[in-house]
Picture 1 (cartoon, rainbow, N blue to C red):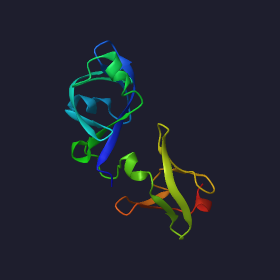
Picture 2 (cartoon, rainbow, N blue to C red):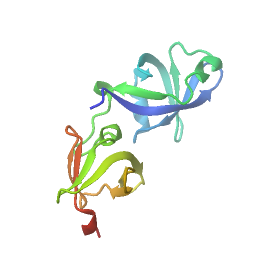
Picture 3 (spheres, rainbow, N blue to C red):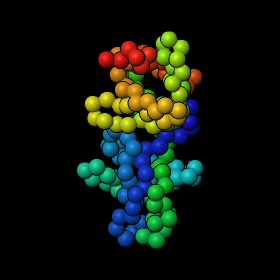
Length: 162
């Protein structure tokens, strides 16, 4: 499991004092209000303040005090340590932990590794891109077992999906 969890991507500057506009990669924007520190490319940064917009977050990070300095961070990702990550309910997983898991059918068929997770609103979809592409709806009727520790997901055989 990764030591850090990605919570957002810096998409632009905001204002003239080095504020950063963040595209959140988390289900709950409010989690940004509790952030005291983030990591950008593995370097710890202190969060000074946070402002929530409808679907974006504005962060002021200590030491970034101009538009020019803020531009250096554009398109970089914000990570938090796993200890600072939100606690997930039983049966929920971080996307970063799902990506890279091997998917096998309960009949032993190997389908490949999850390359991406698509958020559709009603349910997530796991995307295997290698070999024959496969989109797997993350539904209890299809996903039998999630063994994140061993990077293995067991699903019902594709031919049985209805």
